[in-house]
Image 1 (cartoon, rainbow, N blue to C red):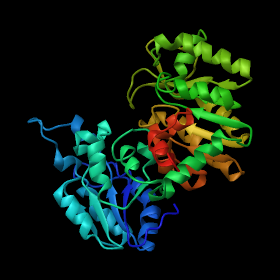
Image 2 (tube, one colour):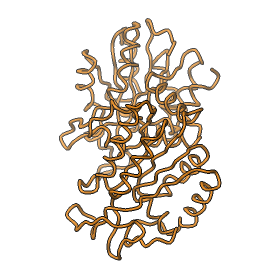
Image 3 (spheres, helix red, strand yellow):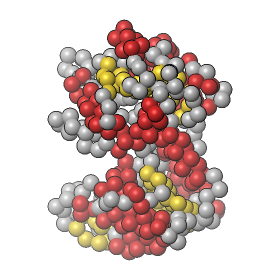
Image 4 (cartoon, rainbow, N blue to C red):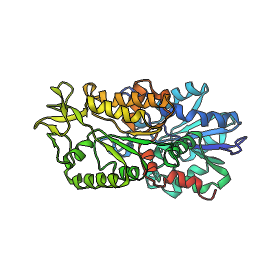
Length: 402
């Protein structure tokens, strides 16, 4: 981020899409904290900061009369907390573009911070609209994209706006740089063995990632609901476990591809099974390929936890995306927690570990292990697409012409 900020106004795209409770209090400020180094750097270098972000999907959750639910989705909920973290007053503009935004941006002095209203209140944002992006660009002299979590979206504030700035007027923020550098540590010349731990409910959500991983991983540990599609494809009886019937052939093809490439795929040998999908259901440890009718696998079992941990501890590079079970229900969180502990332990022994994806990040944070892994990504979908080998629009827009 080698732009000259002094005396200039910098438009910074951040990701302040934070969870709020029913009284609109922030319940997890990780994303706000992640943006602080970039904001503070610009202020320290005598620049003014104009922040823009989205919050939720307001146009998909309109009021009954078809109007935008401003009370629920306004970024004003973030102002006070951001001010506390920065230890300075944060001005708030109740519109994203228009006369008031132009006036407030113009009046901004070096060292001051202005937060614009939710970019997604405007339909033009999601369409990547040029006219809307141009209005945003006119508010500032420089543009910095520090919102890795939305880098896979070709929106006006993440992508289109960059075209109105010359190469020496736009840059990635520190968070974006860190996300890209850490993902590239896994993708380019990683220390081996490289083990990828992939969980979550569906194979269909992770097809491209699995395909890509088979090309460069040494070991692939598969947990979560997606494991049962593979187990059934191999001829196992998985009871009422989640299975994507239309993906059984794909699962066999992926297993055959891995075998051909010499990649070892580990599926859970046993599972914590239940007779119903709820925390109070009757539970039992069952072999994953012998789950009785009416029962379903909701977490990896004790043997699988030990085997997975062993593979993790013998790895030099680790990528973890997705939970090992129904992590949000306490009785089925043990597998995810066992993996989190193993990843932290392997890191302490010198392995490089990258954790990305909502539930795996939540597990690491809840267990107080976020400082004990090498890097926790803030961008679930964006990190997935980056690891799949796709060029992300938000990244390409900054690199163009530079």
